[in-house]
Length: 165
Image (cartoon, rainbow, N blue to C red):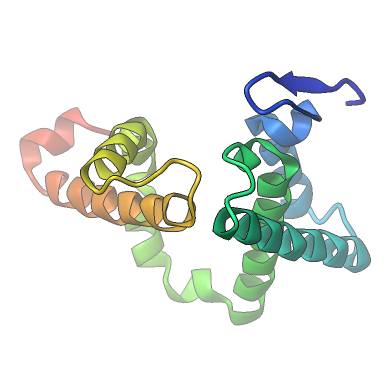
C-alpha cells in the first residue's frame, strides 16, 4: 500500500490501490459490508465532493490532460457510491423497481464486453476529447443506455436468446 506507482506520461506518483480497479473493488466491498462508521463515510463523501470540484475546475481551466490518472477519480467515485447507497437505502428504491433492475442487470455482462467499442465509436463520431467532462459524464451514460436497450431488444429474438446468456 505504501509503494508509489509512477505514471510516466503524467509525471505523478499515486498509490496503486487508488489508480487501479482493485481499489474500487476493495472499497465497494467495505462500504457494502458497512465496515465504515458514519463519520468515516462523511469524510469519503467530502473527499468525493472536493475531488469532483477539482476535476471540473481542472477541466475548465485546462490544467492537466492526465488528471484522470490521479486519486481524484477514485475519491469522486467512492463518494458517489456512498451517496447513492444511502439514498437507495432510505427510499427502498430497489424493492420498488426490482423488475426493471433485473432486466437491466441481465445486460451487464454484454455491456461490459462491448463498452470499449461504444466508447470509441461515440468519441470518434462526436469528436470528444478523452479527459473531458462530456467524456466522463455523458459517454458512459449514453453507452449504458444504448447498449442496454440494444441487448434487451436482441434478447427478444428466441434464437439469439438461446445463444447469448
